[in-house]
Length: 187
Image (tube, rainbow, N blue to C red; front, side, top):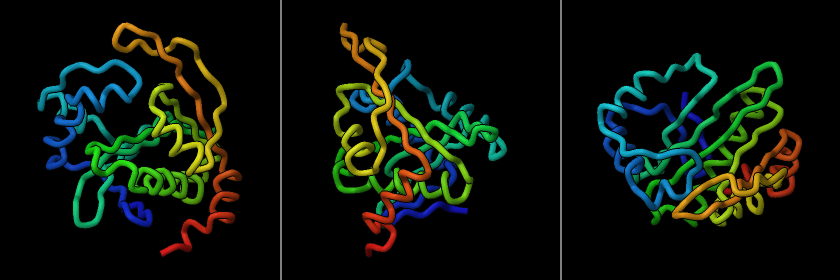
């Protein structure tokens, strides 16, 4: 089963995706925008990571495909809590030429539709490093998420501390956005 947006398709990650995923994992400009620790990644590490994924896991990762282009990024729903119906979501677009073209918004919208309408989740959250203004704009201004908190000095990058911005969205907020924007009705 694939998850469809207006422009993107979210699908399972395949072995042929690994060279590009490894390239992105080792790209400093991409990793600078993401939270957590980042170390050089070998192809062996990439294969082990893929082998460890399971469709029965509470951590689901997707390849983001753009028609006519192929793999342009990744998205996830992780730490899925079925009792409380919550999950953490993140994404990355690997090539800068695919940024600021609505692809990120479409990916977020497709993940929300899947999470809320197919899985029956009630809330998604994410976090963004404070200087990643493009992601804050995509989630908050374009996709109806709200800033729910801030962890001061959480991230350490290039000798400086940066805040972690906590964002979230409920199923109700998503449905209000879809109703008001008619997102899924547009061509």
